[in-house]
Image (tube, rainbow, N blue to C red; front, side, top):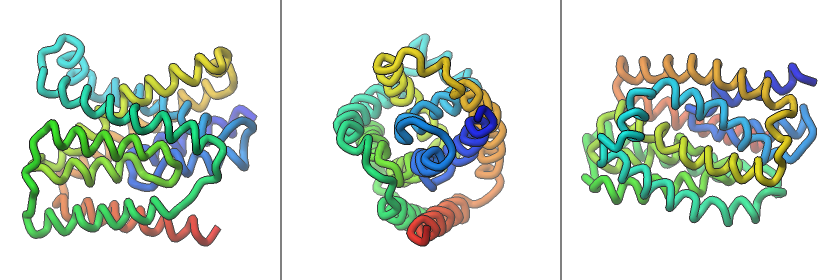
Length: 246
């Protein structure tokens, strides 16, 4: 049983940064592998990759906690408030709904648009507060299994004039407050959740998450962002197609 949770953690640690809805994939896998609500299990495993983000971007979080980077703090506050305001009501509705793939297909199409924008060097030049609002909205919708959080927020953040590495950095940083709030809610509902075998999954998702995140960010520094977004869109569309065939 414990090794099944470790596998779920590895799935979360690898897929969290990719535009194929780690929540959807983990929820789907947990249906087959372990007991418990699959959506809650997927949300719980986000704690592991949240810790990976805290560890990898520890310098950024120090600046945020000490309020030295007020621009980033404002961005995260706006994105978090909107994400939670949209995501929590949706969670209450879809908690016991089966995982779908249509939204993953939409995410893939959005990333194709992202690739096209960067290929043509187009941008809407949206200000940070508007980008935070759009990215927060998309992140809130990503509570729905099958709607990729990373893919949708990368699309939203690409509507500004941010550099590729900054787009990914903001996308991953903005996940932390929402994941933390979501899991505090889950733990209040089930105080013993953290003492279940899920602890093993958290550890495996944390370790795998750090390794895969490091690899991905090094990759985006070496290749053109058009190719990066195009590759992400293809992964997303293939994942959606595979899901429809299952």
